[in-house]
Each structure stands twice: as C-alpha cells, then as structure tokens.
Length: 359
Ligand SMILES: [Zn+2]
Ligand SMILES: [Zn+2]
Figure 1 (cartoon, rainbow, N blue to C red):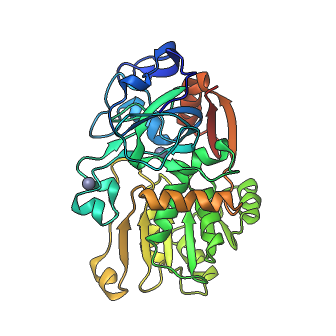
Figure 2: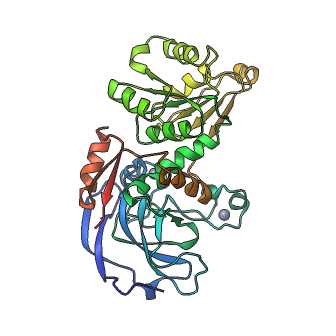
Figure 3: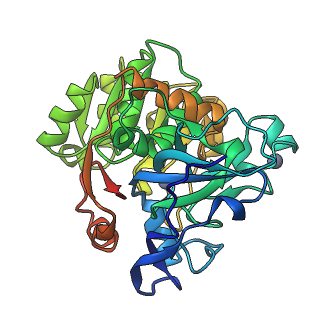
C-alpha cells in the first residue's frame, strides 16, 4: 500500500561520527515502498521535537554509542505514506502517527509481555540504533508507531512522544492518588513543565521546584499549587524544610526528579513523607543516589527509576494533549536549524521544547 507521490530524495540532518560535523543532506535517499521489509512503514515526518537525548547521541555521551552515520530524532509526528507488503497492522496510508524513542521491541519476551517494552533485549531506538525523525521520510515499525488522535496538531503531538510519555510514565510509577502531594523538581524544564500539567490533570497537589518569577507564573497557569524557588532556600537543609512545610508539614507523597542536577535526588530522600516514592527521571552524569539505609527502612521509602513508557503510555499521553489538558510550550523552527538548536541546548538557553518543521 502506498501513496504515489513519494520522491526519491528528501532532506535529512545527518552526522557521520559522534561530535563530528552535522550535515543537512538535501539529497538523502528516501526508502521506496518496494524497499520496505515486512513490518515497516514509511512516514512523511512533518514535525519533530528535539530532546536532550538527541544531543547526547551526537556527543556520544552514553555508554553504548549510536549507529553512524545517524539521522537522530525521536519525537516525530507525520503521516503514513506506505506500508510494507506482508505487514499485519490496523494502520492505513494517510493515518497520523508518531515516532517515539522506542522504535521497536519483540513483544514476545518477559519484559514486553509485562508492558516494559523499553527494557526488551531486542529494543530498537529511533535516532540511536535506527535512523529517526530528523528527516522528511522515515522508516519505522508498524507495531510501535503511535496513532495521533484526530484534531491534535502535529507540532503539539511531537514533544509528547518523548517528553510527555516519559513524565506520564514517571507519574504512574509515583504510587500516588488524587489529592496527594507530588513534587516536580526541575518543574520549568522541557520534561518538568509537562509533568506539572499531567500531575494537575489527574488531581495531584503539585509543588514545582525551579527558579525565577517567569517560571513561577508559568507553572501556576499549569495548575501547580505551590512553587518553590530553590535559589531562595540555599542554606543547608532550607529547601528540605520548605518542601516539608508546604506539604502539610509532613513532606510529599512522591517526588519526580526531572532536573539534571544530582542534589535534587538526595534532597528528595530527606523531604519525602513515610511511604513516599522517589521517581528518578533526569540523568545527571556520574551521579549516585545515596540513600541512608536506616531511614529508607524506617520511613519505608521507595526509590524507582522510570525509563520511557510503552505503547499504551504513549496513547494515554497523547490523549491528555488531545483533550487540551496538557499543552507543551513549543517554539517551531526549520529542520535545518538543528545544529544551532544543539548549541543553544548546550548553553541551557532553550525554553520549553524546540519543534522542527520538516517541510
Ligand atoms: Zn527524548
Ligand atoms: Zn521483548
């Protein structure tokens, strides 16, 4: 099945080695429908978000290096233009779909059967082990593409496909119920500002930790009950005391750490109330969570890591956006700007999420 107007070449942003030059290839080969293998789908990518993971992939920061040459990107939103012959899927040509970080998994191992598709040994990652969404036409896998609800603009859907899914999954790991206090650390960032909205949407009482009046106002508009400017509580133990104070004097039921600073993890272990849950999401380099064993036992604390979500988490995350409960803060720029965007991200000068327009 295919749409006849598929060009032979398109634009892709490529690097040949980690930390090497980033090229805008205007003559990138577009995989033709006849070249697709069973299970594969050709997607015309219209918008793609830029995630810190893309920057890490280019820099080669992680223990396992990405494939090279690489077309990065894993927040792609577009339309199906061809489906390989012999593919069993409910997708049709013309459907709006999302390319997320988890491009594929076997769906047949213990992890997959338990819904933990991201930890499948055969997992493939968009823009890392397979080419991703920083191109006009991307090949992806039918069984892991996410349907995008009717009426949800593709540029809004794009950041949900990694940032949104990641924080939605993290909140599901928080072991909290409506009315519980949940701290979002790094609340004004690309992940945090979405976490605040999901948390408010499901009825948690949200404490956002970040700094600056702009973020205070933004997070209040997203439904955060309380904002704590960490720069105003810089002394030893001051921030911990303030978090406990605003949460009934007992501390929050859960803390979602999206910030890339190590101190936030250890603070959370101090301010959580008994039976509280620390959910680790942000990835500060070379950082350890130092939990005091006595207090971990005595307060019955839980520490959990939360990697990206599964297929169902992605569908749920997009549904909140389609219903207007969650709205990513986005700035749209042309695909060709990717290298400049990376440099701005390295300087921490990116508010919300950058979304690239591929056409
Ligand atoms: Zn990502
Ligand atoms: Zn599997």
